[in-house]
Image 1: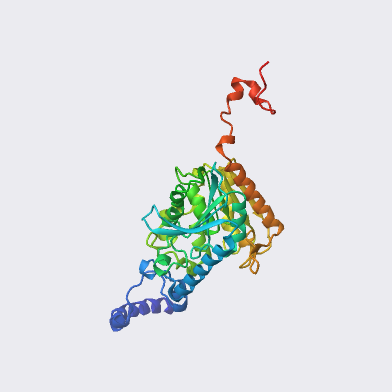
Image 2: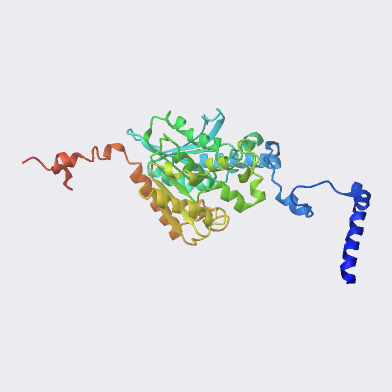
Length: 389
C-alpha cells in the first residue's frame, strides 16, 4: 500500500518545485534552436558552401603563372604550325553580353574553293584552356580538311583574374562557345552548312547543351566523357568542388536551393530536344566524370534517340594523363607531343573521324529527294539511273 502513496506525493513535490527550478536557470538556458546543435565545428567548416558571389574564388596568386603558361602555349602552337597548318589567334564577341572571347583557329594551308567543314572544339576543365596536348589531334583534323576553332570561354585560365571569375557553369559559357560561329561566318573558306562541335569532359558538357538548343546550326557533335548532370555531380564530388561553382552569380546556391536552374544547365535533362547526330564515348574507370554519372547520359540517349545517338562504353581502358580513364582517348607523350595510341584510343578516334566524315559531308552529295524512286523506279538502281529504253 505504501508504494501507491509515495508516488503521488513525490509527483506533487516535483511539480511544486518546477517554477523555482525554471526561474533559477532561466538566465543560463540557451535560446531555442532550430535543427541540430552543431558540436563538430571542424566538420561544419568542411561542409560549408557559400552562395554569395563575393566568395567566388579567382586565380589569385596563380594568375601570373597562368598567363605565362598560356603565352608559352601560344608560342608553341605558332612554332609547330609553321608549314603544317594555318594558325592564328583571334577574338570574337559573345552573344551573351559582348565579352571578348579569345580562341585559336587552325585551317589547311591550301584552301578548298568549295569550302571546308568546320569543327568547334571545346576544352574541358572549366578553369583550364586549350593546351598543347591537343596538338596531335587538331593537326590530324586539319590534315583531314577541317577548319578548327577552339574558344577559351569565360572562366578559362591565362587571361587574368576578372576573366577567371566570370565563370558561368552551364550558363553564358555555352553562349561564348556558340558565338564562335559568328567568327566562322567571316571566313570565306568555311562551309557554314557543314558545322560540327566536339569536346571532352566539361567541353562535352558544353557541346551537349549547344546541340540541344532550338535552332542550333550544327549538323553533328561528339561528347567525350562529358559532364551531364550537375545535380548529381555536385552531390557526388562534395563541398570542395561545390565551392567553385555554387556561388556563381547565375546560380547562387547548391542544387537543392535552385533545382530549376541546375536542371536547365544539365544536358541529361534536355536530350529529348536533340535533333542531330551525337557521338558519345565514356569509360567505366573514369575518376573525374564517374561512370555512374555517364550511365544516365548514355542510357537516356539510347532510349530516347536511338536513331541519332552513337554511343560506346569503353571498359577499363588504359589510363591517360592525370590517371584513370577520363583521358583514355587523349593520351599524349609529353616529351614528343605525339598521340600515345592504345587500341582504345585508336578505336575511339576512328569512330570520331568516320562519324564527322559522314555527318558533315557536303550537301551536294546528299540524296535530293528520297521519294524519287516512287515516281521513277529506275532511279533506285544501285548502279545509278537506268538509261531510258
